[in-house]
Image 1 (cartoon, rainbow over the protein chains, first blue to last red):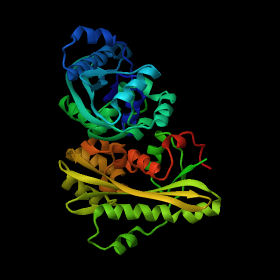
Image 2 (image 1 turned 90 degrees about the vertical axis):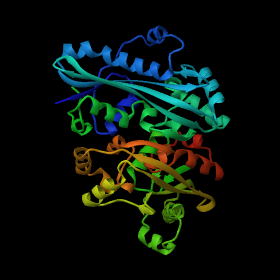
Image 3 (image 1 turned 45 degrees about the vertical axis):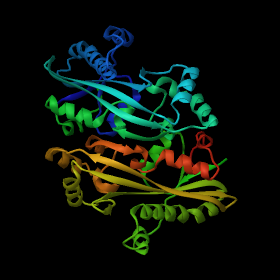
Image 4 (image 1 turned 30 degrees about the vertical axis):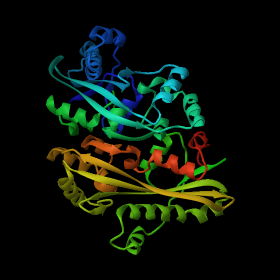
Length: 213
Length: 213
């Protein structure tokens, strides 16, 4: 049967898929994201950046699937960034950067962009592919100083794109959004469903997948 | 310390709170929802209906907290319904009703309303209260016939308000929304944060709550 392969180390993406009935194989890509972004050039549209990163991640795990003898699969790569003030923001990395970002974005809105790339693999060959991005407008709340410090102390915002989550502590500080919430968490279910259709797979056929091998 | 008490049997609400760092006491209310709706009368605005149901659920667990000696708590009650075609829809209950609802709502949009009521309890007395509702517009996708039958066969849509979930299999069939996704799952985090503030509690003070007693 067809297996979904998630080319991502993100526990949030894995949780979204599991909650939605799909147990993917997880194969983490090792691409140099900074090098890919640099190769695209500074004037590349942000939605192209995230989609190209997603494509690179999906392609990167293909040789391993061949080596493992996974012959019937759909590989999905994703990349998420926050587009605000004309810039794409990934993970802040430090408390100081995360604090500065929140002080800037509290009470404002920004676009969370997630690129998706699917590769349909049969008998070790890519027989179809489909890519697209989701864009969701996120309206941030305004944490009090005490709330922001508690949030920073949790460590959560440091390691996530845009310095916030929707599905964990950060959910208290997202007032509303326009778009697909699963794409904000990191993998857009309705978009993946559409792309699966484009490569000839029904999502319902992935629901009863066996546990990861 | 102050404990959050969730007056709901909904596993989805409990999951939202846990993921957001709060381990509530769960005390399920035993109110007769149909009787409350009937007492409100047929012309009551839908946002009033869900908020009054939330209020009744929260109030219903108060005597038990007193009996248990829980003296410092915030009780939260919630009620969710889908407002479509001028009607409030709760749980479909059967495959036939769920199928008919999906055949009607596929490709369309509707409003998911969630009423919230908070009671601040100190020394066994209600010292403050706050209530409000969230309204989120949900744009449904169009499952194929095979996808809809697989979804119905999963049993999931039968026991949830509006015959869909956002955080489980139904997530594949929600194309986008405008509003707060946590309120669609059943408890709106940013609204609860605001209501907590109205009763004098910071959400960050609830984050390190001990496991349920």
